[in-house]
Amino acid sequence: MSLLDLATEVRPRAYAPYSRFKVGAAIRTPSGATYVGVNVENVAYPEGTCAEAGAIAAMVAGGETEIAEILVIADSPSPVPPCGGCRQKIAEFARPDVKVTLCTTEGAHKVMTVAELLPGLYTAAHMAKA
Ligand code: THU
Image (tube, rainbow, N blue to C red; front, side, top):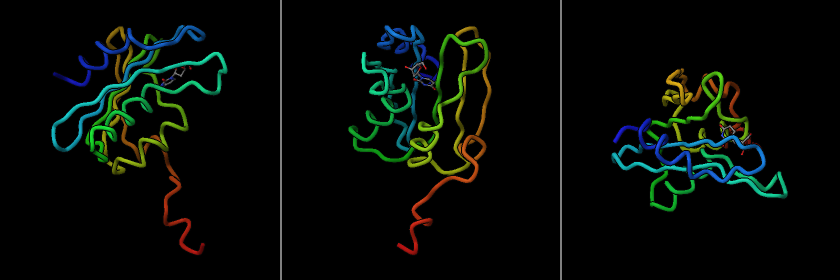
């Protein structure tokens, strides 16, 4: 199944009673396995989690730690970009050239790389003097 089909299928299961903005995400790893996630909001708003974070958590729980490709979809006017925190979360498990596909439910999409989404990435190398 394609990442687009997987993310489209899971998106309605998002728990988004506060924003009413349901997001679905799907990851493929180098093994070919796929993992999905949805945003899960909370009445204490900052406690909500993004779809990308959910998919990453599922991947790690599945025993894998490398993203080969990731796709995110929402009913937004333009292809939905991952938030800043999720860009850093994706970068933890993806090389800079990994493809991130941003989609709308209407069929628009934009393909970017991890490096394009997060220039100046903070890495463990920045702690070298610690
Ligand atoms: N959201 C995601 O899950 N992923 C994104 O890429 C953008 C935003 C969620 C967070 C929140 O639950 C809702 O969308 C509104 O911001």
